[in-house]
Image (cartoon, rainbow over all chains, first blue to last red; front, side, top):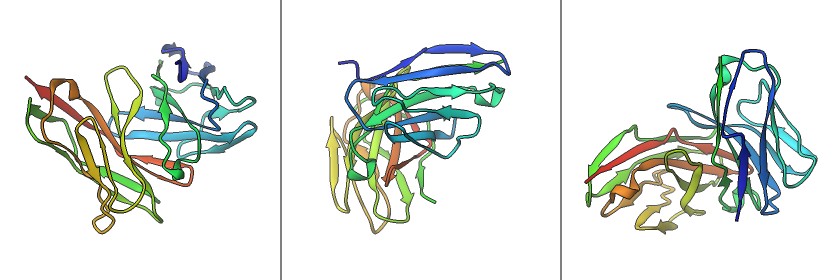
Length: 115
Length: 110
């Protein structure tokens, strides 16, 4: 009963480095999303996907790339890390459109620090 | 755009006290409304939801009613426990977009 699995749980990067945050779900969910959580700002949507091969931008997409080659995986790439990207990142999935009232299932998050 | 406004925290209550966390929203359409809970070091978990006006969501003693006329979805619990200490997020969904409030930290002391 894995649900949504995020790796790594913690990461420290230097400014300018690149990395990929991994997200995998085993519930055969079509919809997946990436959020960042910052103090006093709640969760903000970075990118989302409504199925394999389909992605779209959320509220704060700059500096991040995503791809969705399989139903299970939805990696988030930081192209050139900046201190402003220090945050906690959450991946979420849901079986149908959230507008249908279906809740999202969240991973435990990745704490990322950019020095 | 859509927005969700929650009362600022932290909220500190004694065990067995009554809890209310206010949530109001603005949306261009008819959203579904959710409360999520986040325990330390974990992701968000669904607490309860309501998908249309006048629906009441309930779970683990928590309740919230979808009030279209006041655009509100306040979270209530009659008697809180120490184990309820967490951060609570109100959220709305419209199409595939989810909008979260900023979260309200609840601390329950014995």
